[in-house]
Image (cartoon, rainbow, N blue to C red; front, top):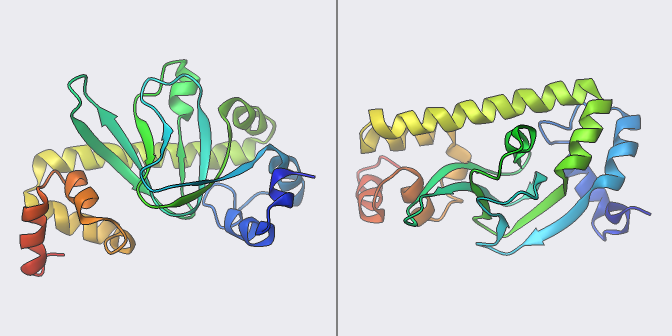
Length: 202
């Protein structure tokens, strides 16, 4: 019996997995092969899933909660690259393919439930199923494009513009994110974010 099959909420978790943007088009045969690879893990708020510089990497499918991807400088300064929530993924796929250490950390913003598997097992599965691999690699490219767009936004838009863009792109996350996390993502102080909120910008 698989780890998922033993889980007390197995039926609901299977429904959540089938809503994932990468997995939703898989066939019954692919699901039967995929499910035994999974571990279902709950993480507390602020838990560290991956550390920048790690070489042991995993693939994450978010069932509940919000993750963030964070890059740190040698001096300890941090920048949040992205948030990801239900139906989305986070991954170290590019680093694994390039045989380089993790270039960022992955942390839980809220309490999080994840379906995960080791990257080697995930890549082996993808290589056997080109249709899933195509869907996944498209999601990874889109994710990387969004991170790049966010980085450019920090340089080109003023504070109200950055807030407006986030509202447009990620409206569903606005009330779920701690204001301190949102302010850090937008490269604003919490006080500036609060002033913008009072002015009706958020």
